[in-house]
Image 1: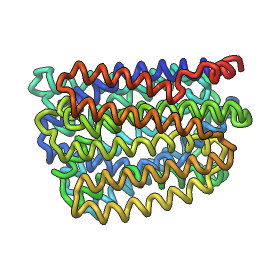
Image 2: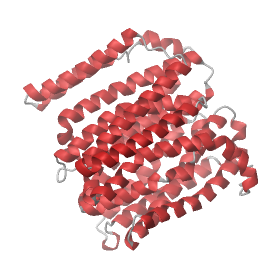
Image 3: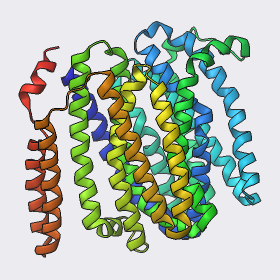
Length: 477
């Protein structure tokens, strides 16, 4: 069991490593560099406005479908017919809401034009994610990994033509950048439908509200959770735009890009864990050991990256965008990377609670987190700008992540002994101290990398990532 889990994760992460850094560090960075901070900052704020209401397109249906289909694959076609009909109706509602918010916020006609394209991106992405959730529910995680990066591969190709193709009629603009994403997602959606045609051949799409009511009744706790989490995750850029303007959003976007890339790698685990937990929810031993191992693995990576961002944050951003990296964006980057530690707990233990349909406390704490996030943003952004929003994200993500773990600890009797706690604290401290000392006392990059590499190995041992005896029992399952 664990062997397949780690094999699938490794395959998906290799694909991520081959594609996502090119998108984040080369293509997206080149687009931001080619456009002014105001233009890209405005795009980033509008994109987050569209993302803010992405929850309307999903309403927890993907997670709900995954938990059902992972346990009984015979329900794919019947469930898909109802869900697709509902998602099409929700797409109309989504566009109306986004445009209504845009009108209230005073968006210009040019901004509405871009917003139309961004809405198309989110609608297509919603359908792609739904069909990918079916692939994952079938436990075909490697195929899901291919679809995970296919749209990025396509958009990298299309945007590269805009950037460096030398075709006057196809020069880069922010609207063409967005349209390239629409085209890529459309192609991926068609390919997904082709691969799932046998599973969906008996599907009948339903638009009748009466027949959709039972589905909506079962899915509403999932919908509420996705809504609350989407709000406290994506509202920051929208609030920065309204309280401090597009230029400040540009500063936040530069620091956010690397964090977004790292979150993409972590979300691969969540995408595998939800169907895995759903299928094996009664196997308490497997649940405890896989959740514990994944938490140690991601917390180890999170502490390492957070420490590196605190010491080398500006240097790392200068690699991405040397022209616009500054101390403000580096500070944003550092806060966001420390918030990743909370996100790790949220992704792992939130997936476990979702798989077990334990959504009551999740929704309560998500609502509390949203309220906390709004208060912090309104308090901090006017004075501290992008840094204030990043600090609000740090506090919110850590709070919600810890609460997810606490609920799981009580519900599933998770074991987190004193020796394990001491090992993690010692490993984290070793990483932090070594990185600080390398920067402070040694001038050469070679020495820095050598010290950090050695400490990574020691830290991995202290985090018990190589604990063969612990893993061997699951390999035999």
